[in-house]
Image (tube, rainbow, N blue to C red; front, top):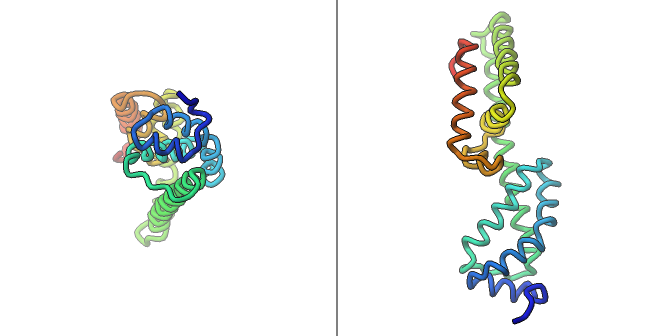
Length: 185
């Protein structure tokens, strides 16, 4: 039997198409660092860069039977990472525009006077202080959920905890925020 490390990428792809998990693992190990570097350079976020690479490999495995690579495999993977990072950057931009729009409309609406703006800022500062006082793991989970818009599943995978634990942390954080503040959360 031939050593897997001596095979070309094309041979490895053929093995992968037939479900050979050794070929998949070898390709994963061979290109992971390169793909991570590309994603990190574009996203400037370690967790999201890792997530992008993981998503690429997950999709590769899920669609292995229908895989049709007409270029060098390394180029194929690099292109996949570039497209995925662009998609994430676009989503990030739209999220930020939505937040900016809401914030801008709050401060430009005639219904708000100076006192309302001060009250709003004070409330936001108090909420931030309360979040900072949460237990470490709870604060991380809540921040990933509310500030980075990550799903419970994504947070669970990233922090290597169960989705129920993620839900428990978010519930605890929201309960504490409700107890300390009169604003609806």
